[in-house]
Image (cartoon, rainbow, N blue to C red):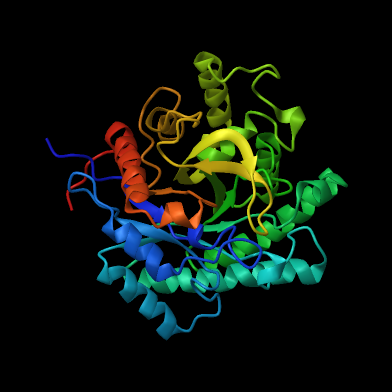
Length: 349
């Protein structure tokens, strides 16, 4: 019997950039991240691709057609495809808050448009068979909390404009479920924002490390699912909480990150504290990676949704020393293979 070959297994490139910089460790070049990804192998299985951060020093959001072509050729030379792209919607990168001034919101939408141009071109070049463009609100939870109703309306308006532009390029936008983004920092708040956008080409990006903290109500205590005295050894209660969370968010989910978390928050460089990404084999990890991935990849009846043509590992803010070790990526790939063996499928190619 053939092994599952879907969903395709991707590695994220942005751990080479996120949390790095002058106030932390130096960034790891994209070429190095691609090389580490391409070289990983477990029992003859390799990564199928990588997801890409449209952010210097990895890839300039203002890349020319020739630049985009070179990126496609770089991936193809390593027998890798490119999947989802991250739009640099934040103020330091030329973007702005999705609930800010008109100028802020216009800059946000402009960054999405530029990202969709690159996304469409990579698709046309044959290197990007699937994937979405990731966005967030580009604002902190405390600022959002000054006027939850009004600020959610502003974020939704900005996202709506971004969705309409993305539709012109045949793209969908995935709002990242991370506790450091206002209006997206709790699971109910995330759903309220998505419902307010009211566009068919927006959805949710679930990251197992980030969504775990939704259960604990970090930054949104009134949306906590697990009891205040929760004991991590109580697997039955944790599973029940994951089922509650995924039942609500799974219908919205259009992009999925496999990850591990030790139940704490962490920030590095200029990145705000968010769900701590742990190594796949971290003994302090609170998730059973392949089992808990199933809450997102299967419906409540246990049937495969087959909604994701690829899934991506996310390990942001790992120390550079860890990321430069081939064993790190082989362990990650092994975890990804376990997820696909348990929740994947086979298609003739």
